Image (tube, rainbow, N blue to C red; front, side):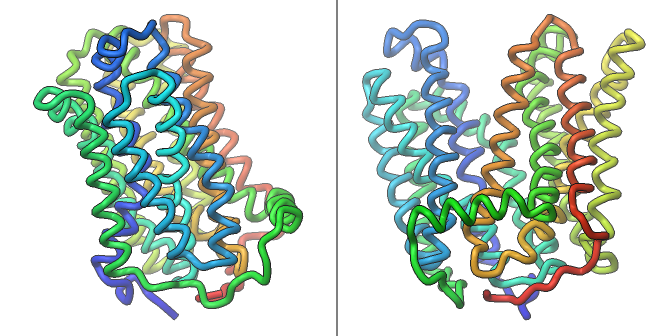
Length: 403
């Protein structure tokens, strides 16, 4: 068996960097929207189409890389995905039209998502569920830094060299990950699936969707993460527009909340020395629900100021670090030879629910806190109910490392 201590530090950093590609590719890009719109002469809202294209490419790619990695191993699709991501980033730097921006952002998402999917599969290959929770908490520590610094780095690069340089920076990040992959990552898949064909792949996804344990654990994480995406979309309006917080102070609050996520993930790592993921997850799911309840209380009571809103946001973001490592460990525990496919569906559900939550907050916008509070509360209720989809009581799942 493999423990987190047996995984080299450089490999842990690499896995964290691979999962950080998605937030880096979105958050670094956001400050450049006005500059790109002006430079390319685009109408309001057209730049956002490239943002959506990235997520479409990412979700499509995730569903492909999983079964491919179960057949050919983890390294080949990672090499392909990172190479594609790096190339697309360089081509984006030279793009001078909306069509090029949308097309190459789609390709960038198609390549970059390989890291998020296969990092989880690699951890599952090497670790038991208890160890998976600890390792995922360490990866979350690395990944949690990305949303804090990505907008700052993106803004700085934009100011010094212009928006094209943001994509050059992302290409450099992809190249560094590619170099790390070649240097420190050995193949982790011991037993490969017999063949790759469309019908068995679709059947495999169908079986996973009907697996009440897998889908329950995956949805519990997806709903919690979705609530955090709702916060990302809705908090600028609530804090800056509704309560007059300056952009500088908003950045400070955003950073403090991200630090909470990192600290929470390390708390889980300590708790997993004494408790199993099966014991922790049902209890941890009450934490984000507390945040949703505080936001609803603030709205229903018509309370003034931020004294309840800011703690609710902190608890909400921190809860992702409490729920994620445990839910991932349990969802992946029994997947064996189809760990890549299971990882793909698990991560796709997480990002898909995030996109849905952000869309709901945007569409329900009414100039108040209510849409954000409702979405956060409803998603966290759903997460708490999702973990109860499992038919059996929580027991230690059977797991063989490397299969």
